[in-house]
Length: 392
Image 1 (cartoon, rainbow, N blue to C red):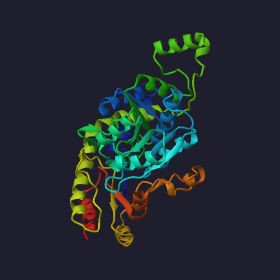
Image 2: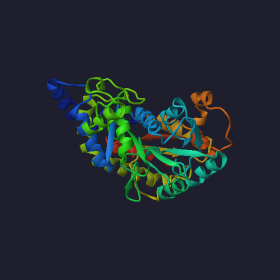
Image 3: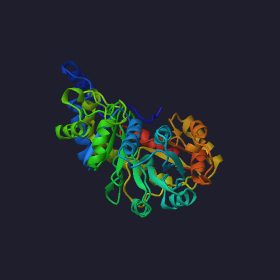
Image 4: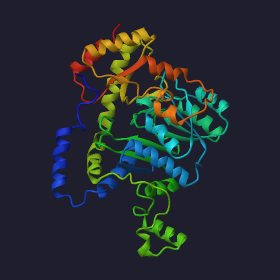
C-alpha cells in the first residue's frame, strides 16, 4: 500500500538511535532544556519572535484561545469566524471556552476562506471579532487582501498552519500574517515529534500569557523579572509564589523526549519542504491535464509545501469512480481534512441557530473530494503510480 506516511520521523533510523542514547543519559524527561532549545530553533526558522512548544497542534489551538481570553483580546460570547473546511480542534476550543463560532465558507480553488466568503459572513453576522483561518493542506487565500479586510473591520486574525509548514504567500511564510499562528508536529505532519505543536507570535504580552496557560496558569517558566512583577502585583511572597496560579490555564506541556526529537527534526525542515514542493508540482502537472479534476489555484503562492494532495472532481459520479480506482490500486486515501464542519455531529449538537451563511463550496468539497499521500519518503515508483492514477 502507498500510505499517507511511512515513518514516525524523517530519517527515522538515525533519529531513533540518537533518541536511545539520549534516554540512557537523560536526568530529566519532563519539559526542560531541549524543549526550550526547540522553541528557540522553531521560532528562528519560522521567522517569528516567539514559539511556545505544547503537547499537540490541538492543544496549541486551545491554549491560544484561552490566552487571548486571559489578556482581554477576546471575551466570552464574542463571535469568532473560522474556516468551514478544517480539523475539529480548530473550532472545538471556541465552543468549549464560551465563544460563538461563525462558520465561513471556503473556496474550492484553494480550500481557504477568501475575502468574498468572509464578507458574506460579516454581512450576516454583525460584530465578528476574530477569524481563525485554516491554511489547508499547504494552500492559502490571497493573504494581502484578507489581511487588509480584517484590518479595515477590526477583525483579529489567527492562523491555523498545522498542515502548511513552509508554504509561502508573496515570499512570506504562512503563519506570519496574524497575531498568532499554530502548528502541529504530530506523526505524519511536516515535522514529527510523535505528538506536539507550537504557537508562534511576535507579541510579548501574548507570549508571556501562553507560557502561563501552558502550565496551570503559574509563572514557572517566565523570566525572573516577569515573576517578580507578578509577585509585586499580587502581593505574593517568594515561598508562596511557587504554587500561585495567576490565570486560567491547562497542563499542555510537552516532554523533554519531544523536545529532543524536535531539535533533530527541525534540521530537516528545508529538505522536507523541498521534497513536498517537488512532489506537489509533479502531481499538479498531471492534475491540470485531466478535465475531470478541479485543479487548485496556486498562482498567487510563491511556495506550496503540500501536506497531502487533494483531488476535487467535477461530479459526484467522477469522485466515486476515482475513489474506487485509488482504493483498488492499494493507495491510502482520506476525505479532505474532515470535510465541512457543519456536517459533523459535535457541531450540530453544540452550535444551534442557523446564521444564513452559505457554505455550498465546503459542501461540495465534502462530497466530491479526497486526498492522497505527499510525504518526503515516496519512492520514484510510488510517485509514478500516483501520477498515472491521475490520468483520465
